[in-house]
Length: 142
Image 1 (cartoon, rainbow, N blue to C red):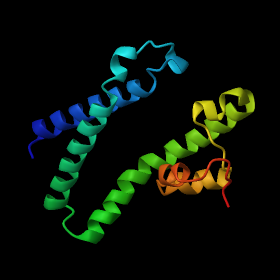
Image 2: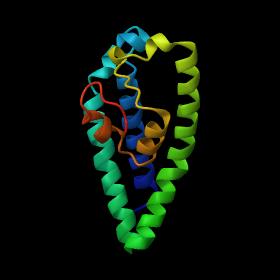
Image 3: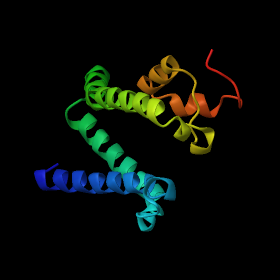
């Protein structure tokens, strides 16, 4: 893949990621509806982002990381070099938010507390949506 194509694909992925971000904050609770025009494009932006990411991953696997071990190590490094700092910052800000504005941490905001250990384990393994979406209402983390 030439440099121009790579830059173009990165720009499209970045634009799609921004559209997803603005789609998430477009609701009235976060911005008073400031970004309502963008909110409708969120699902399509997710599709664009993941299709292009899949293409880039397949290309990299085909050209550079052509063994399962090399691919796994490289993929782990790419994901967790971003995910770990993001999770640390998120947990710090979440703790501050829970302490200063507990009224925002309710089920009406789709916030369900299953304990800090549960949140850390499921965030690190990217299983939080699978786990929390399948818990019966009112259940706690074992």
